[in-house]
Image (cartoon, rainbow, N blue to C red; front, side, top):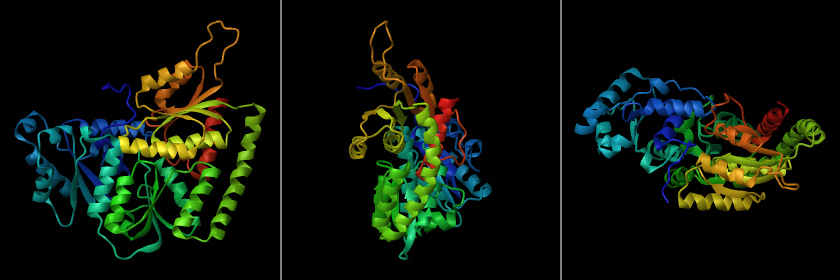
Length: 443
């Protein structure tokens, strides 16, 4: 049954491509879209992505053909050629990506021909198709990375047995992407690996993007997003991949490190040494928080309202390490059947006693939570399932207030926080999550 989405938690595919380019070094996006598309999407992404800010050539500085009524009637190819030519003259980038929007796709502009007509051997250009009717921002993430790594980056016969690529963490739509990737990189480097994250400040186009083909393994930190990228990467570059969840907390991170070590044949002695070192620090800090938690008897019914990347890791952490009753897990991605099956399978394997609901509409999510937490109508005995805590987006604070609960915004749109290096992944990230949850309660 068709319906509208009230207060959406994603953007169109072009938004996903813009978010990637915003965070990727040395790459510039040229929008071939109607007037306003690029600017409006950039505002939504930077604000909703934890106020992540603009890249050097994104936001209001992003090149755009900005087609109007004339181009809709007569075609926008000439206008696109003009914009690409100007961008090549004034922007110092290693790679230009032309991305289409809904209007230019519907009028049938031959973007590939326009790109060929103005291509410059010193400034390479590729094009991608990102109208909203093909998918949302998460689809756009896959499209642009697939184009860059599997169609542009040259194949390398040389493989570095210690080098790995990280995929699956989505800039902006995973608001803590920089901190999460940095924490995973830190842990993998303790295993003796070299890591391409692509989106952290230490990465460069020449070394990390172009050098990705030399990796011996790809690590996909998502149950659903990036699968197309790593499968095609294996076909093109011959690089196998290991698919797992983004780990949050000691239990999951130890599982993750052991899984990586098994795939890359890292000695178990080294892995266990790293885990022991990390857990010693982690639990010595965690136990201090535990004093406050247990003294105040802070054990909660909880629900998460996040994308598929955070749903399982955060839910497991609440259930396994905080001992909370994780009742509802809402996943707000717009998933096609094959990805729904992949997520459902991963959720069942995680086995943390929660109900999985796939829904991206804020009003329906609010109604569901209100139904499961009825008000006291003067009954002598009633089960109100309290105290209650939601980990969701900035949109879910109102729902928490309606049902008498508390909320911590952690997922897109995350407009109520400013995120730079904050993280929830790994050991250090989990301690920050504990701080944020219980600081919310103390406040």
